[in-house]
Image (cartoon, rainbow, N blue to C red; front, side, top):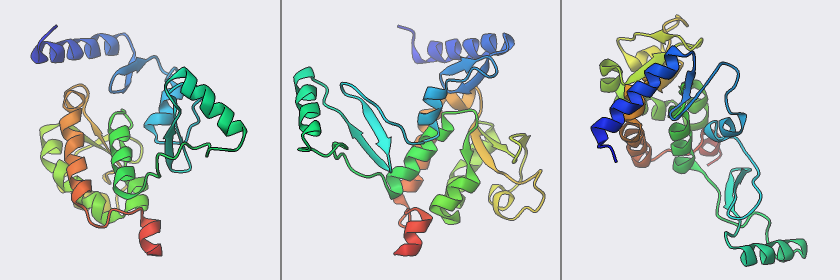
Length: 215
């Protein structure tokens, strides 16, 4: 097997070759011609609800993640009990709230070329958490591993990442999205996403904004 450095070079080479052939690098390990993005996977990456059926399948509905039995006999028994009203259809793995939900959004968004929608994230989790994320990513914006985009998803250069997001009245200079650069940022996605996880995990008020108001 190739070493880590060789794997990185292969990744960069694939990115160059596919880009030269007019393939879009729309997700960390996915390329396509324009208009041929995988709609099935986009549901996952946008953290939208989905049903799944069959052995070991996992669904995400109403903020609840749940999976089916992996073995055939267990699955047959599950279906029979479900039809007889003896089990909850969800399987009961638990609701995704607060910190876990914020981590899901960050992880799935930063795997894509579209990146993390800061306005949507702020509406769900509050501006303070967004500012903390931007603060931890400042050095990586400066090094080019994290890219800032305006509302039209155009790359922009900012001097103060926090102020550019919250206070800049010029929409062409306001940071609306952050994404990982291609291919260097994508190559370090695990490390960069882990930084966000650290911020979210240590954040005391990491409830969805609507829930925080209710409490």
